Length: 403
Image (cartoon, rainbow, N blue to C red; front, side, top):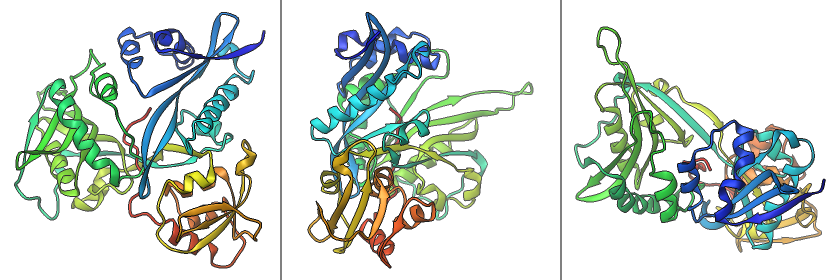
């Protein structure tokens, strides 16, 4: 039978997510479904139908994302799943293309996602947009140097208080950190702050205040465990810890490291340039591990380049190949002084595909590193160094939450 791609409304959310739940082996959680259908960022629900049966799904979250030096709208690809009975029939390809086409039509310059299997999305032109890190450190190895000042206080707050306090902290931190996403009140209320884990330790919500002003917050769980001789062996699991400054971030982590009865502190989705690596006397004890985080896909090259800043007034000409959109294939001249990118017939200085350009555009890797990986071809002497100077950003991109 013919597969038909339809746009569904929020009232059909439970039907929409069935292929995802089946593909990932997840139970039906009516509470989670009811919350997720009320998140206003979920603006598009694309469902693949065979007759009256839903065989696949893909959604779009509409965010504003911080880019190097700016903020721009982004289409977040999410909730992608195909029924195992309908694999290898082009359903996922049709759903992803529908997401990309709709985003381009709406004037968005790029799409982003967290990939369950990265190889799938690279064929659609997605490039690695950020690196995430996980840490696991014993509590007795968390000494800071230099020592932190004894300022500020931390309070455990209710979900309602967190909803009032945390968004302002997040919004103050977001403009200076490429990769961070906007969050509506509904996102906080129905996704970030709600505690879906009923059988485990409760979600704790803590705020750090300095001179009476909220400057940082943390979401964490304390997994208490005891040996038979009543020796505590529990872990503290940090879900999110964000501060408005480097000082408030370090003070917040000092609080997390000092929580009693925790022998180990574990954290996920940390940035690769997190200050803890340089703030602790024994940084190796963090046991930092890296993984691919956000993936990004430029949809319109000139528009994407206008959505970030550049660090030099140099000019680079890219020869770009795009397997999906011919409008992105060809030579593009980037003028750093004007911040403009236009098509050109002049000789290119660098050759690369759209996925690699997306990675460099986001600041996830330098052109030099990408060239070392065989992803960039230098066509003019010195072009790689000039491009790296042009695209320089002082912070590594970081997205603190999967979607």
